[in-house]
Image (tube, rainbow, N blue to C red; front, side, top):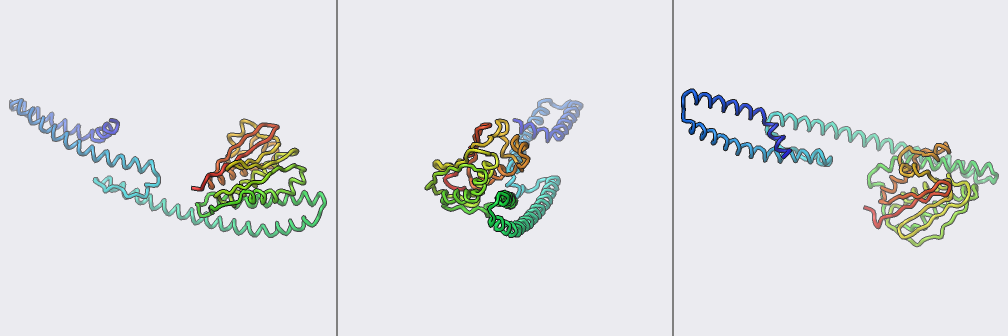
Length: 325
């Protein structure tokens, strides 16, 4: 009914002209004292013909209107061919849309090229910067003083932030950067733990993990990135006590006995740049770690959930899907 009302509104001017003409004919017929029945019969025939014409036009109007609605609702259909124009105005609109499509395609191509160039640059930069970082790491590992240990821990944080830069850009790429295969979850977890072992030792934190026989079809690199980020957060916000990793069915949980997360912060901790009360107090949080964890989880189809209590600790659970895609 709403669409029919819109159709009548569109043809309101034509209807007014038709009514004016009918009035003129009726007035002329009355001046010549013509038979009223003949006038009524002629008017009825005109009304029937007009109704048929309007019905046919409404059918075509409805069909074209609904098609345009689908074009508006589904962005993927913007590349679909448009209806053949019926009026000169529609032809002009079609030409305008074609020009806009071409401009949009050019802008998208430029964006993809610029993004590819930027990703290539940062990839090269990351590999280059890792060379001096590795040299410094070897140098620091040769010493056993407290200062050497502290510097090694800070250098590892630098290395982590460097890797986050590359991951930040790669997370928006298509499935080309996703390699799904059967992954030994135990080896992924142990590799991540070995990376942070010096920090556990320096902070005198107890680490608990019983091992697992779980194999899952996922992307090993992105799963490892998620676990590393969760371990890093647990270490950062735990001054004493323990950090643990447990595996149950298809879920991997990273728990700590740290300062916890305030209830009002929990719904927003995965937002980009959001640091919450802990981040503002620590002055070291970038607000990117958990944001990247969420995006990486989405990339591999994993669900990320958080349970936390202030002063008692935090548990972040990564639930892997049965398969990716």
